Amino acid sequence: MDESSMPSPSVTAPGPPTPPVPLAALLAREELGLRRIAGPADADLLWVHTSEMADPYPYLLGGELLLSAGVLLTDPDRYVARLVEAGAAALGFGVRPVHESVPEALVEACDRHGLPLLEVPPETPFTTIARAVWRLMAEARHRELRRVTRAQQALATAAARPDPVPAVLHQLAAHLDGRAVLLTATGEELHTAGRHPSPEAAAALARLAGLVTRDRPGAPASATDTAGGTQLSAYALGGEVSSASSRDRSDLRTPTRADRPTQGQARDERRTHARDERVTAPQPQPQSQPQGERLALALATCRREPGDHTVAGIAVVLLSLLTAPHRGTDTAGRSAALVRLLLGASPAEVAPLLGPEGPWTVVHARRTDGTRADALTAGALGASLGSTLVDAGYGEGDAVRVLLQEPHAPAPQPGWTLGAATPTPLPALPTADLRAARALAHAEATRTPLATETPATGLAALVPPDRAAAHARALLAPLTPPLAGTLRCWLSLHGSWDRTAVALAVHRNTVRQRIGRCAELLGTDLNDMDVRTELWFALRQE
Image (cartoon, rainbow, N blue to C red; front, side, top):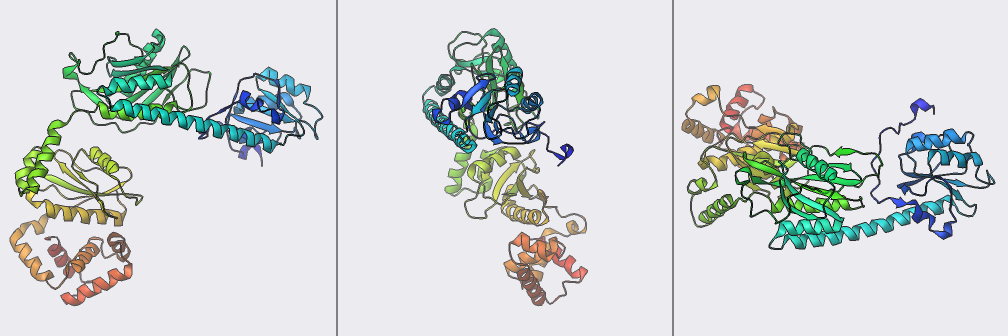
């Protein structure tokens, strides 16, 4: 394999799902007999790799303890320089049978380039070293999980207290050994906990909070930075406070000094000595009120520990729930509407309780990957569409149903297939529900993210609805509902057997049998375009 065809390590690979192992912890395993003979004492091991290539650079991800017996070692200085360039954490050199001792040139090269060099005795197999590293990683992972579990329990308990927001921040600051601050988009502190960072770190953290609370599409959900050795992080919250009440926030503010510190908590990524700023991929932000002010959780810690990002993520979820806008009026209206419906009121009587008057759009949706949507996933879809009126469905294969009011209109959603009826008045919602189901079946059969029912226009719109319905009932009288539904789906898909089978979730031979039965009962030739047109006109009156 020539060098040009080798994979390039220039792009940093994602780290392993385990915490790094300090080099000192591996050297402390006396049974291995390892001895550091060059390079610095501090290093974090992410992997173990064995290679006897003259240049293993293209096959390293970074953070490896590279084990080698030096079979092809000819130029120690270039060899070590390439390992450092690839991001290797340390080099373990096995003595005998190739080399009786570690070459002095290799020792000098490791000292010169700052790469830890370990001498591996002949009686220690490389596989034993690898097993020891993996065992140390498993132990570190277990400690991390226990730490995260304890933090989760403490945060959940704090969220149930009468003063949940300050309590959560206090527990977060304690578990991260730093400072936690709840900030508005303008940098105003609502709550703080933990020790104060330096002025430099506080200013940098305020900038991070402003970055994640920007009220514009594509704003990052989180960001990290370092300032004067302090690790900083900021996370956007789903809650908000009304800017109209910014002059009086006694219900939110905790008595504290008005310094502007912030505290950070960072992602579990490979440690780096260079100052960096990482911003996660843009994520959908919850919609805010026009006069709302976004909130951010800001963290500042002296160091980054495995599991810190997970602990911060738990706090972000809890604080987003605790700081979400109060929707008491909306909740009361929905509850009153439900009670009145159960007590015999008509939909027209309870509709004003659900929002302003106007036409409604019924949307049916299913996950594109075929998995069933739970209540939380369905609620997230409703939020994306701009509605809280969501039915997640509880039966296998049930579609999620969403009711939209103007001015909201359905739009394609990543990971979903949608079918929407045309906007309709409240009394016609049952019919719109049926049409939305048909639109969803059409979207799934044609593999389109959104299918919208088209209203009757042109010549079809010139026929009075009552006369059109009477004609449809007479024409379709011989057909049972399943046959009529199959015929309608088949005609909407231009007579495609396969797509109709997909839309109806039946075998294509079943579709052929049903269509043949329809032709027999109607006494018509379904290959005739005039016949198809008249039947389509009739079926659209349902």
